[in-house]
Length: 184
Ligand SMILES: Cc1cn([C@H]2C[C@H](O)[C@@H](COP(=O)(O)OP(=O)(O)O[C@H]3O[C@H](C)C(=O)[C@H](O)[C@H]3O)O2)c(=O)[nH]c1=O
Image (spheres, rainbow, N blue to C red):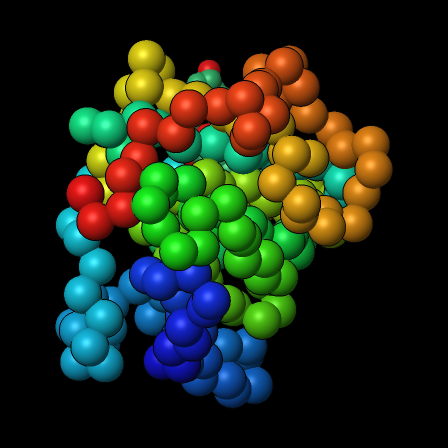
């Protein structure tokens, strides 16, 4: 397991070991004991999510669930490739409004740990890209929210992404009142 810190406190890039042979490879995509042995203690996960985006250039985000339903997410790409983004939305944080962007792909096997307090989103780089991610809290429709994808300075590599109506209508980061507090 390779563990990389990022410029945003708490956001990690995790790369599980892969065991290749003449058939392909095997990898333990989630093992709490392995991570704890490396000093990484993630909260309990209660829900797994899986979405497929048919076309490259599909952008889902930037999303969050407000407290007390905030979600931490452990994200990986099951098929294809995507750029995954975490934006620090914790008021009072030294990196408030800053982001981390990481290419996750079926090929590189990388995972992004996105703690609660972040906005999360991704743009697909290939058709039929699948994302699978573990969440630390259950979906709560009333607590679910979005911030405009192009309002936090992320270089997504696309100018006219495929968006849901919800994402197309989301408020800009500067007009949005974050419900998250650093250290909460
Ligand atoms: C997130 C979610 C959605 N749904 C239902 C609600 C809608 O009827 C349908 C599509 O939901 P939505 O358009 O919010 O899906 P995404 O745009 O992929 O949203 C997700 O994308 C970004 C990248 C995230 O990090 C979040 O997990 C989540 O916001 O699935 C559920 O039933 N359970 C869920 O946990």
